[in-house]
Structures are given as structure tokens and as C-alpha cells.
Image (cartoon, rainbow, N blue to C red; front, side, top):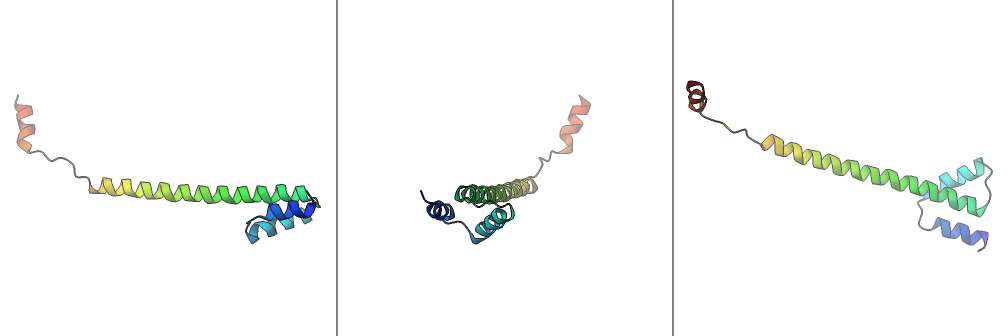
Length: 91
């Protein structure tokens, strides 16, 4: 596979922000190979996806906690007549 094809395939449907970060990293670290570019862009893309996945989990956890909190707020404790306690003490 030619270098251009390796880069073209690595770009795929990556976001501009990921591509720019990859180019800046490669130039800053004098990494000029197509395979190096591919590896770096895949790394940045995985990091971005992990952050997005973590954010989704945090939102889901927050919603779940809010639902549990609502259920706790709606719960009413059982109320007994004081006579039931008096009978226990009288026995």
C-alpha cells in the first residue's frame, strides 16, 4: 500500500480536530512516516471515543441516581398508632 493510501485510509471519517492534533504531533516530533501518522491518529481517535463513552456513562449514572433519589423522596414511612407501642410496653 502506498503512503498516500495509508494516510487516506487513516483519515477515514475522523474529525478535523483529531486530524489537526495528529499533524501537530507528527510535525512536532519529526514523525514523517505514513504508518506513524496512522498510529497517532488512531490513538487520538481512541482517546476521544473513550472520553465520549465515559461522559455518556456519567450522564447515565446521574440520571439513574436522580431516579433513585426521586423514589426515595416519594417514599413514606409506615405510621403506626401509638396504642400498638403502648401494648408492647404493657405486656
